Image (cartoon, rainbow, N blue to C red; front, side, top):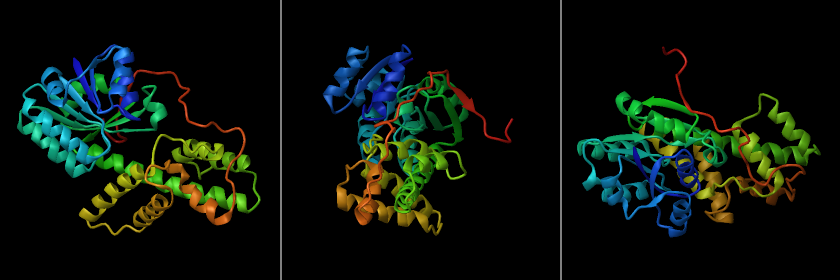
Length: 316
């Protein structure tokens, strides 16, 4: 299978690296020519444009920063879609938009999948990340070998669009945990607690979360580098809020999280690293929330392993 990959940013660059590392015939494209050149040195072919990639590849993966970017790329690819072609949307996008763009692909004779990843850039780099996939079952089975190369745990979430909904839901939860971790760490410091001990207490207790064992570490190091920025957090939480509003769910925490990150963006800029949302409390209290012994960035120390399909509890 010949694969096209469009979007070589923080996540896309790492996911495409997994395909190259495992011997796939890969064509890549990005507006940043330096990112393309880097992949070419590792065995990829440089794509001319999205239309050419859809024409020449069996499947084209998009991993882009916004629904608008995905739409722009799709408009270029759509004339080249025909029977046998597959579009795989790995961007974090709106459920309704995934359904709309995927519907255009299906109407043109192709197949469409929304298959965002979850688990952090450090796991995208090693192929140990989790992947949600929304599509019909025959399409899922066609692309499963590809997905189990890109990631370790692969969950078929149902129809097209379902994966995007679950992706923004899980990103929303991670953001809630990040904001709560910031409050917990600052409060512990203000109360005179040792932050190394505090970190371990949270880690081994009912208060732990994925966000704590990753983002709290780079917060305490002081680098705050999780390869994710406040504007992306605001986009993802905003997408979750839009889903709730479309379905008449009167959320209370989500609007507050949106407000917190609006304030963070106003203070520090939209490209500020997302864990630096804690700076709002550091500035308010004059406390320095750092501790020795924590890494400046997260790395995945688990060996790359073959991926597998996750079967939801209660299903055969």
